[in-house]
Structure formats: structure tokens, C-alpha cells
Image (cartoon, one colour):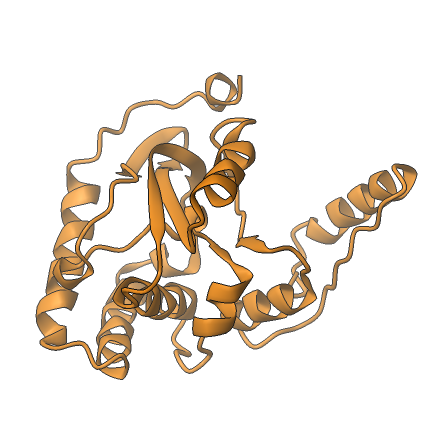
Length: 228
């Protein structure tokens, strides 16, 4: 927790007590950090598991974690991703199917669904903190994803169904200027990863996002129905 004042710490303390009563320990730190990428790196350094997932917002069903772990245990994969519902005020404003795509043509995995082994993290992490725009998180995870998708030695699986319900309002989606900054930082990440014709890939990525937002269903979503 990067020193937030939104009640996160109170919630952490509440769960810390619940963990303690169950004979377990919840480890957490609340302090100022150097952006979200720094927070991700700190959290990973504190973790001990073999599969890493930065869970945000709401799992699409109570069985998501079980399903994910079955893939890792039975199929010997290095990373996994799936579908995501992006909602605002109870309506879908974008949706990832979970199907794989070609990164050269702008494909990006839905970051909140991305899981990977610790060995994969040790090979391609940590998140780069060089992208210091207000949208640094999106670019840092895109930079990390590029490393994964370009590494043909890694095995992956995708789950073609929603794994996470994500709430709109992150730093990279705040306004036009932030989105423009994100596009510029993505161009830098592509060049840093020595991607041929980076402008083409970046334009494809931008077009995919614009298309997805423009033609979103805006269907009303009831979270209670998804969690049954």
C-alpha cells in the first residue's frame, strides 16, 4: 500500500486480525513509494509463492484461483492470462475475451489477469521504473509483457472467459492528456525492447483500444450475479 488514505490500511488491519485468529500471518507495508511499478516490485520481493498475480478489484467467480492453479500444476506453463470485464458505474465499457493475439499488431494481455511463475519473474522482472509519466504503471506492465511475449522459450495458456471484473478509474484512464502520455511511453517501451517498426505496433495498440471503447456493449453488469 503506497501510503494511501482511502481506507486501505484500515481494511488491512481488519484482515490482519482475521489471519491472526486463524493462526496465519498477513504481511503488509504502507509507505510512500516511487510509483506503482515500485510498489509491484516491493510486493513481489515480500512474497513467497511460486505463482504471482497482482490481484485488483473483483474476481469474476470464487473458482478463478483454483482454475488458474490447475493450469499451472497440470500443464507446466510459465504464464497465463484470461478475460476481463472493465466496468464503470455498473456498465461494461471494455472487455477482453482472454483469447491470445499477436503483440506485433498491438495485442496486450489484460494485466489484472496475468499470472506467472517466480522463475519467469526472475528472468524478466522487475517492473521497470524508468517510465515516470502519470501512466507509468500501464507502460511498465506493457514493457514486462513485451518481454514475456517475445520470449518464445516460455509456455503460456489463455483462459477464454472473464477472470477479473475491473473498475474504471486507474491513473492511465483519467483523461486525454494521461492517455496521450501513455501512448508516448509505449513508444519508448517498444524502442527499449528493440521492436522493429515500433510506431506500427503502437498505432495498432492504440487502434485496438479506441475500437474496444467505442464499440463496448455498455451492458449493465450485476456483480452479485458474477460472484454466485
